[in-house]
Structures are given as structure tokens and as C-alpha cells.
Amino acid sequence: MPSVPLESLILTISSDVVIGTSSYLREHSHGKDMTYIKNTAIEVIEYVKSKGIEIRFSSEDSFRSDLVDLLSIYSAVDKVGVNRVGIADTVGCASPRQVYELVRVLRGVVGCDIETHFHNDTGCAIANAYCALEAGATHIDTSVLGIGERNGITPLGGLMARMMVADPAYVKGKYKLEKLKDIEDLVAEAVEVNIPFNNYITGFCAFTHKAGIHAKAILNNPSTYEIINPADFGMTRYVHFASRLTGWNAIKSRAQQLKIEMTDSQYKECTAKIKALADIRPIAVDDADSIIRAYYRNLKSGENKPLLDLTADEQAQFAAKEKELAASGVVA
Image 1 (cartoon, rainbow, N blue to C red):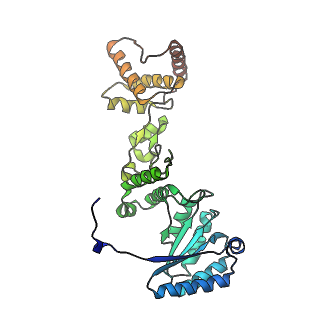
Image 2: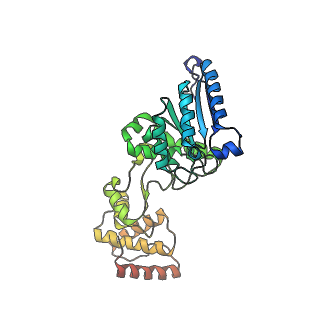
Image 3: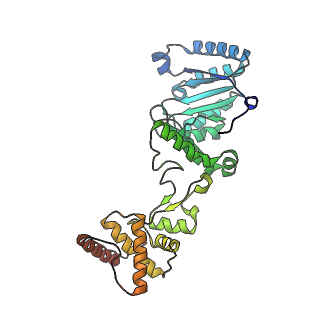
């Protein structure tokens, strides 16, 4: 890693004042009333500002706090020069509509920046974060892979996905998107967790297509079933063809990658054989490739050699499944 001259570093010192404002926390946590909270916040903010230090004031459990109380304290701290106010959905109870309404009202009360913090207990952390931005928030708390207390908070990757759809030019111009996977891999290894297979953008299945009708459309135009271009994040698309759900367009694409050209009817017949085998046992990509190659060799030689090494029982099941598929005409 290259060294960085000390004179080029800029050190910013800031502080944060956080206190619970809901009746739950005032009664069962710190035991202070709103008058005490407001007066103490003003006193601390004025002192910190007098030292030339940036400061943020945040209420905890904002969405279970009284709106009049919240606006009163936020207005008071804004008047004494707080740099940023924060609202927190500490227990993850807020809905996107509630978030939008609160941030919009708050934006009309304070002139400073607004930071938001959303927990994911009810699955709304990403939607809430995006609604906060739409309503005028300037900062969103995120974490890598959404890791945090209980169900965690707004995941960085998930919010990036949402923002990418809304304003791709801005997002691509501001962030090094290809670093997302590296960051998530680093954190996952450090805290010894696996990245979920269906994780936003970086999950193994995020850009994997399996069903026949999906595969056909994706091969023709990826935008049919992808709202985000995987290449923007340094990711790649994968059309999964070694399965019972595969379609003949996916097999055709794979055969052409293997430099094998056939007629459409032959691709469909080859697809039926792959689907039949996948119905009787799990198959890997290598198995599907072997079937394609063996089928093509049989076409060229006029022979009918086995496509794979199968047990007698598997051969019987394979033949029965082929007949079933042929009768149903299911080769999408």
C-alpha cells in the first residue's frame, strides 16, 4: 500500500449527542423529561461549537416519539448552530410513508443537514432510506451487508441498487461501484459470515437466470429481466442451463459457445435430453456440456451412443423421462 504524506491528510473532529426521546426510553432508560433533554442538548451543543468542533444531535427511537416534542427540540438545536440533526428508527417500526412524512416536515423546520438511521426489523430499511432521501435527508447510515444490532440496518449494497435504478448517471459518477464486492468480501471474511446467495448485486444468484423463458429474453436483451447492468459493479451475468428448467435458447447459446452449430429442432431435442437427465439426478455444467457434445457426435456419425455413463436404473428412468417430455412437448 503506498504511503500518504501526513501533510496531505485532513483530520475532521466531530461529535454526536444522542438521547432517547420516546416515552419508552424516557421512562425505562434514562428517566429524563423533554425539558431536561432540550436544555441539556442546547448546553452541550453551544459548548462544543465554541471549541470549533462539528456536532450532530440525534433522537433515539424517533418514530415512537411525540412529533411536537421532536420538532420542538430539533428547532431549538438548529437555532444554536447544530451541524446536523439525526432521526433514528431504532426498533425498525417505521414504514416508508411515515419516514417520508417525518423527514419532509423536519426539512421545513431546520436548515441544517438531516441524517437518518434505519433498522431492518420489519424489512423496510432500504425503502425507508430511499424515502428519506426523496423527502430531503442529506445523510443515510448504512453498513456493509447490513450488519448491525438485531436484524441490522440499511445495507450499503441494497441502497446502492435502489439509487442506481433511480439515477444511474449520478451513482456511476460518484462511486467506485466495482469496489462493492471487494468490500463485502473483506467484511464477510473478517466477521466470519457468508454473503447470502440472493444478496443485492453481489450474491451468487443476483444475475443468474435459470427459467427457460427468462433465459431466452436475457440472451436477446438483458434489460428484459435485469434492471441493473452487472458490469457496472464488476459482476457478470450467468445463464444457468444445467437444470430441468432450462430452455432450448439457453442450450443453443451454450452450444454456440462450444463452437457447435445445429438446427433449432436439434437444439430442442438436445435440450429435452438435458432436462430428462436433470429430472433423475443433479447435473453439473460439465454434464450438460458432455451431453451437448455427445449428442452432436451422434448426429454427425449417425450412431446412437450413450450421452453419459448411467447405471441401468438411471438409463431406464432417463428413457421414461424422455418419452414423457416428448409427449408433453415441454421444451420452452
